Image 1 (spheres, rainbow, N blue to C red):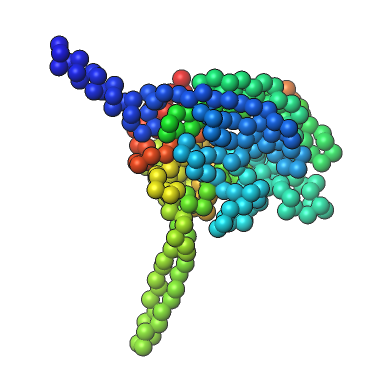
Image 2 (image 1 turned 90 degrees about the vertical axis):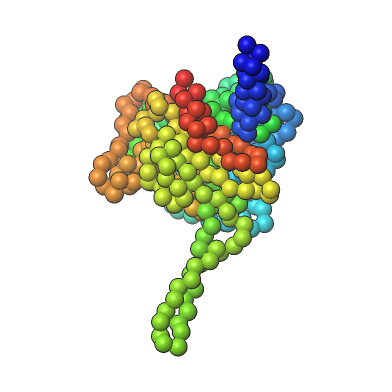
Length: 346
């Protein structure tokens, strides 16, 4: 009996202090509405993220995202660029949910970089009210927004709820978004969607540059080397796909991981089993775009099948995603993410 009790106590100790364990004590979350269309989320008195919804942005975003140790896991450009930040795709800001083709309008790629004469081809997501905020071991934020065209006609109403939580080595976001059609809607099969974030440069897959050398016999040798020594990340999916092979494949979750400073950092997106077209396709690019897109089936299957999600006026569709950010000496395991996916499904 004594040995059994000792084993139980040891097991509880291991679970309590395992990296990323849910058994770690949850820290208090504060959700604070600020001036300038901004809501700050603090966990244990440290900034985790801010919800930004000014009219100067074409969509609402969470920006930036920070690990529990303070490492910034999202790219700084274009809002607050950091040294070495890539400057491509200015519409990749923090974390967002948009789509490339809604009744022919592109909500995904809209940004300040689009010329005025082409803006009519793009849509805006305008947040018109913060519905609620609350503090606790799980902090909550809910908002209402409209997906509109240039004439301010509403295509979709959006209601989104965030739940934020964290402990000494983890930060977590559960997002639930309900989109309700205000006219007949088609999400036409497209590559750029749906729920995504732009990773910090350190978590990108190292780019390669090729150099060719010709010897005195005319034989050409190609040597590849990393383009810089900052990027050092990779991807892993629940289906076992790694690196660039994760792109266009289906899986219940995908994890980006690498090192920022001395610590291992992982950022995982978990699909929900009740989402349309589960498990999602992963639009996960080596240069740092990390997105789940269940609606780009034609693109990701090379035309073998197609997904065009249609809503009649008044109908709704719900998307749920979990984001888990961990830091520590070791990367969290696939088993742990499988357990997290099971927990999220419940």
